[in-house]
Image 1 (spheres, helix red, strand yellow):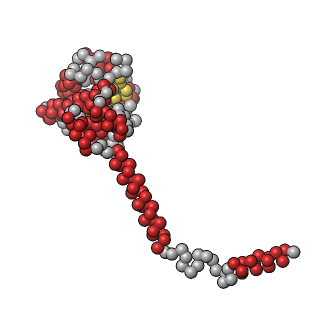
Image 2: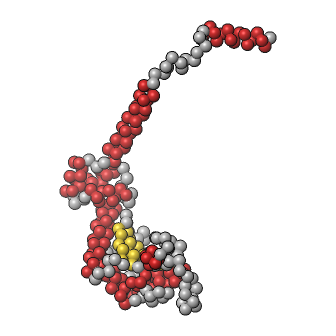
Image 3: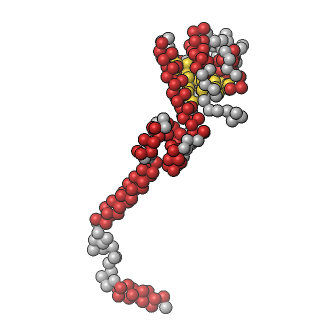
Length: 266
């Protein structure tokens, strides 16, 4: 019975395909169809990218309206990055009718840029720009003086040489109504020397004490303590590999984050 079934199946195959060849023989499908399908896929991808990019762009005529209102393209992009506005339709609405929140975000951006510019000019004037780094983020300014400017090795007492920088920061902050400050202390991987270990058993304590010293000085100069937070990370967040003295010197630093966001309780 099984043998008869095999004969029946073979007979049907011979009827449907007498030569016993696969439909893919005889150069089918054509070789060019593979390239054609690739081209079609690429074109479809290109159109999708073109549509997504064009949808995100700000129309030229609306940019003209924005400029009449004193809003630059850079400020619109800043609002989009900080999620003060998100969609293209919201951008159009914002340009024509700015909300208080969006206006505040634009003012924050301008103040950030002015703050960074004035601080850089000050650093250049006293020739310490090589040991103090300033960087503008989305909603904050990062000021990073290397530890030797503010502290001696193994100590958390502020040096006179670094007080001018902190005084300048305080002076600029007095022109800003709302701000918050976060101070972070960092060290390299070198262990605390036995001479200082009685006071700072590890780099954790030293980095924390240095951040607190900066915070206390700012408070004595009139910065409200509720606007300041401190943290000590020791050697755990290096910016460079601790493979030589130059990199270790860069890792011994204090980072001062200054944001101009309005507090939630105001």
